Length: 468
Image (cartoon, rainbow, N blue to C red; front, side, top):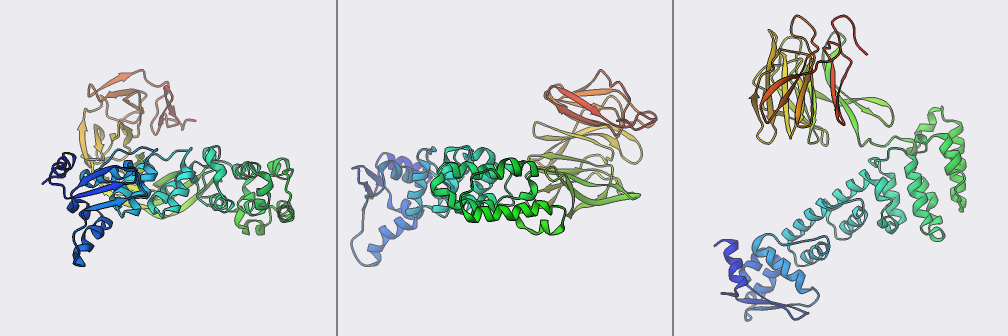
């Protein structure tokens, strides 16, 4: 019998063999076998009497939960779903945990996670920790760290304890564009209740990475702040001395001068270096203005490939290793540093142009080791499948592609004889390539970027000189 059939019987109060009553006078007719299979709590209640030789318990009174919440839990037991909102989900989750209804707990946790916002992330984090919801805590913690600059403006910010704020502002993964925001968060929190919170200032100041704060801001904003405790003033005297010794190596040995983990980075994958292809990956942190060599390697030594991001995954497509031309595609997940191999393209391609549109990746033109290509294909990540699309009007390699207004633009490139200035546009609706007005300069190795209402062509080689 299906769950829908059992639920119909429950709604119509047919062949029910049990009743659950709440303190507000509502009774729910149920099938004991359904609830016993759903929750160890109900199973223990309805079967313990049998195990001990007593008459069956057919009636259960739950006095400390409302009929609304009990009704939702019973509905979930029968249908594996129930209507939840941000108004009732927290009470439902607490009740489900008390009644050992793990599927409901997970259902509520997922719902809250999907609805975390700048306004509720701090409250969600505290709720998850209070009721030991590990997955929800992780999601709320990550969201709060990533959105701290807006979360600190929410009404919930004032409910953080000093220890909770210290933990948050000390996190390496805290996403602040400028370290000054950390001090501003401290100042905002303290001034919400200055009399009781001045005692926590010294503790909180240890969260600030002073080495990332300009001296001018330190002198103009931090130093004049009314620090009323001896510990705070002593700490600032230490910081004063460190600023004076800023060029000295020992300055960077203090934990609050260490750069935070960047929330946004630029990746480079492989390429041509020192006369041969490489498999080196580097990352750029715009906040520290530094490039870092990654311990992770590309899956192949390669050059003349293309890299594209889609749905927080990075795809490395095609290329050349000095001997072999590739049709392969590998997918890198920067959240866990893992690689997976995806479906190969139909054509071998280096100097390929790629872009994304409507959740799919397009690979256009290129060079297969023998000839320049006018073929094009698109990749569906859900199906892990490449499909050929209409061919370009012109063969071209080392061109560039970008999407704008639901169309794909391909500009420039090299056809084997000359550097090109022509531009073609593809519509997925008509499945056809058309010429549009060409660039003012011929360009191969060009970078095409869509921004706002325009497509920009940057740099490249015009057949004589590199362009700026």
